[in-house]
Image 1 (cartoon, rainbow, N blue to C red):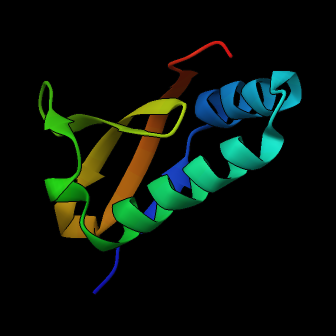
Image 2 (cartoon, rainbow, N blue to C red):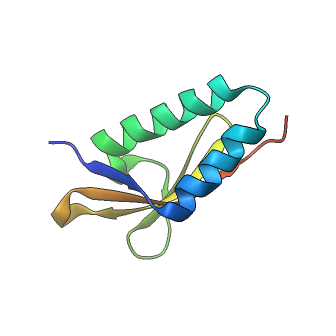
Amino acid sequence: MSFTVIWTKFAESDLADIWLRAVNRREIAEATSKLDAVLKSDPHNSGESRTGNVRITFSGPLGIHFEVLAADRIVYVLAVWRIDHN
């Protein structure tokens, strides 16, 4: 059974800004797709745990904080940032 992944407005806005500023937009799109796929299938084993239900993980040039609500089978992406500046 998969999880529903929901990007918060804050995270969506930051992702849009990263994408607009990117030299290689395909790289950003691919990293986002990989993150979504991992979060949908197995968020509890992705990345490292932080406070409460919050976790951190990385893909390509992106890092994210996300929260897993296991009972509801929902993952909220709380924040996204670029981990390199190429």
